[in-house]
Amino acid sequence: MAEELIIETMDRRPDLADMLWQLDDAWPAFVLQDPMASLYFTRAPHDHPEHALVAYEASAPDVAVARAFSVPFAYGFGGRTALPGDGWDAVIRWAALDRAAGREPNLVSALEITIRPDRRGEGLAAVLLDAMRANVRRLGYEEFVAPVRPSGKPAEPDTPMSEYAHRTRADGLPADPWLRTHVRAGGEIVGVCPRAMVISGSLAEWRTWTGRPFDRTGDVVVPGGLVPVHCSAEHDHAVYVEPGVWVRHRLG
Image (spheres, rainbow, N blue to C red):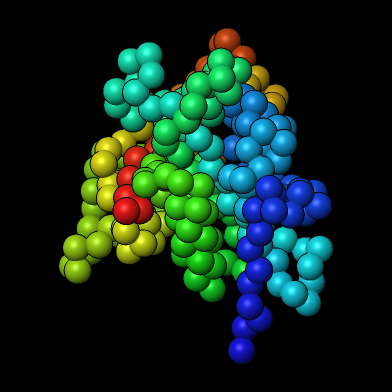
């Protein structure tokens, strides 16, 4: 029988904060270069401890099995009348601006659920999503949104997200496994955020991040990328514009 997973938030267990960073290697190196990431993650256990979750097993209480992050922001303020096209980047920026201005948040966005690579395929993503739903409800919110990064999209980098996100199986559920998990948990796909993350770098940096040559102008498919990277050999830079899928979870 699998050992029971223990899931804690940093407001309840601040002593576990260092465990949050044990799973950084689970992501493609280039994803960690998003400039908005440092704006959130360097301060998450301090500014938003109630939105940072870590999971571990009792037999190994200092080893993270999974983690989850979310962030609160003031929806409806200053023209925020629709979920932003720059999804993940936008909600981090909005949350930072709201915190600096002392604005009261009224909506939460999920940011990430990460499972240790050797524990994937065990259904833990659904467990962490349920834990996030319960935690957002604990904090007094009636719903949250998520700029989801579909897990099967790297296999189809040239397929437009507007097409991929709405592809379904015979049973009506999303074809993508991670989107399907969200819908099974009660989420509703409400749109695409076409520029959820924007990551730029020199060609030398992209070679380091991906192992690809980046020596010709044009689109470059990279491991873990949802879409190709736009490369300009003449100008010595490449830009990755990652789309996401907005999912809304109502918790009432």
